[in-house]
Length: 190
Length: 109
Image 1: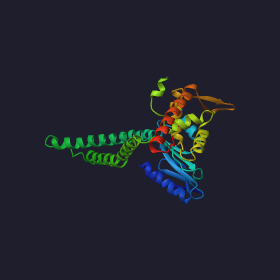
Image 2: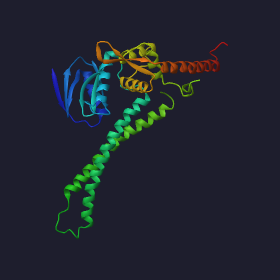
Image 3: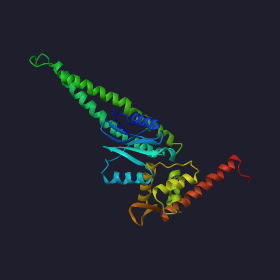
């Protein structure tokens, strides 16, 4: 039996946790496309899932070599979406971690950090630009009596700035803190 | 003395990967072997292993060998340079162990 759930996640940690909770109950992800999760009914706890951000999109020779390597190493590629890849492994084969030492964990976290930084900068840029237009109107209000206050810019600007701030605190900052913790750990262990 | 002995220790992952490659092996085999040798203590993540293998290939500490009958599947094997790294590491480990036992009193001598 297949089950389809439409859901939007922007935090891959939460998404991964959700997928693993469902897998533990017997719903195992078998495909993903934009906000659409396809599940197969399996025995509860059969698979463990992990989500990884690739350096380059699937289809790029480097990424394909890497994905083949993962498959040869016993992982199953459930779905790819842009640079994201959903991986799973049978729980009976033991614990599942793609990265097992500080250095490679940091490398993956840096990839996430750059990805979120791009999004946050984009949102804040769009936000400030639109708020700037609104502010410019207020400053010149006596000169531009005929035109209306640019509500679209003002609301859009507030929205984009808000999203940028939320992304900063919920996505970028946790990754940054994780990297910092691992760097300290690295002074003591591999 | 080769200059490599002046550099720091190998990481545990690199040490075990190199050691497992005295026999030609593919990725999955390396993970299995290292897991067995360390009695499940060192479980190499596939992503970590992939990164380490590429670094070792770049440094010529290991090389790839073609697998008969399967053009896609690759096996890896240690090179002479790689073996030298292991030899140097064994000296460092030996020194660490000797000093550790002497100070903690674990050594009768």
